[in-house]
Image 1: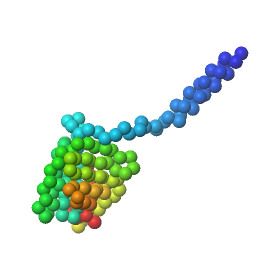
Image 2: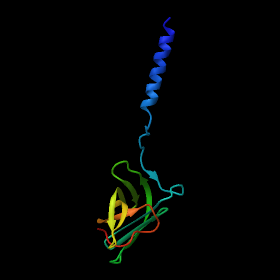
Image 3: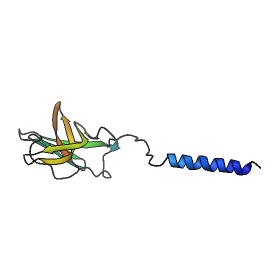
Image 4: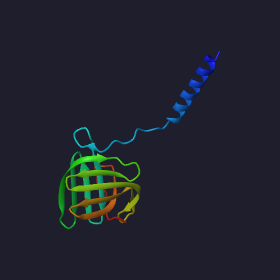
Length: 137
């Protein structure tokens, strides 16, 4: 009879398919809309500037007197390039990789680029509600 051989073959194919799917993640389907269900807490700083994101509020300040507020519209978690926080006028990209800031050489897990009204600010950041201090290095 060929039935046991067929059952064995089907079972082996099923096990192979299961083994090949271990660690598989669904592909990312796009940005997450900001709102009450998205708990955004991020902080960054660079030479003479600070950024905080809490909830849907994005606040960028500088020692030169800039104080810009924006509304977080979407959060896009990155797999390789970095996470993106997109506001109406401000874009924050946090790239994974060690970054040093401050005279004491404080180390943070992200390199950050903030773009606002044609200006670019670079520094360091982390998931937090307390901004890093000092100057980027």
